[in-house]
Image 1 (tube, rainbow, N blue to C red):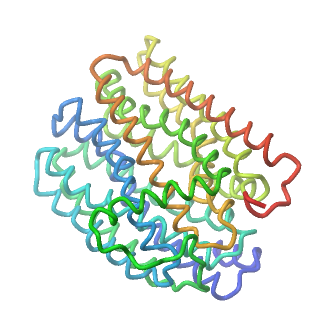
Image 2: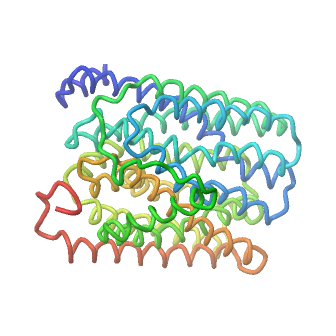
Length: 430
């Protein structure tokens, strides 16, 4: 009923409506996989008794693995058939997770997750191409907000089940990892059945690849640098995002350690905060944030989002420094406020780069955007691994707050100097 109302209200044609339904169906499986992934760091520390150094590795292997995006970019740029890529990601990137259920140590489980991490850029870029090809620009924000809402609602429901199952029997993590693999495969199968409505122009074109092995290694990085050299506005946008991202990379492992070591929260309390409360705000606000995204320049939008989420690390600092009998309530409050800005992060992260691409295939821009996640993930992992034994969680949260405030200022400065008064422009290079 809600889907039909949205289709009529937005005036979606038959192809857009079919894409909309399939994307929302795929989002259900994404939500199941996410509900399990978000608790894995705590499982590693609490159930598998992993050393502290494995927590930043586990939480940041995902972003570091995105460096492989540069090798996907040349293959995906202008490619008319994304379905084969999505199916390959499903069978070789997601399905191997089921084998993680066989192990009781974090090291082999990390190896199983590595397949998903390395294939993630191809899945994301292909998904973005579907949105770019099949959905009009003026409704993409609202369209994608429904995708976020659907995956989030699913994640909320399953996360509470995950927390209960783990508190009931910690060994249930085996079944949960297996379920994540199956759900990830089904998400890719559904997306693979969506045909591209129109062809997309390649950014650089696909010439004959060099037969020399070294060239095959180096050439994608040359194209990565070339894109930023030719599109300075996009480079500036990504550098601003980089500042925010480094703060986020530091935040992730220390949040998990903070909950397990400092606050001794149960699995149910952790999933209630990280899934139900955080994602309830996303569900309620994502449609509104989608409308805002369609109206505002992504640099100004990102500045407002980065500023709003800074309240989260500040409240965690207050929680860490205080002496509370029930600190979980401070955590719940922090996540409730965090959800307001976080509901817009997914939109600007997924759709912001489309502002700069014009009518060319967004795949190369998406893979460059994801590769930057890998670079900041590497920076974050190095810092976190070096300092996990030396700094407190409160100090890490303070560092995150500074990064997010600086990122907000830099995004606002880009909007002020490049786009103020030019909101009618359709792309970042007009």
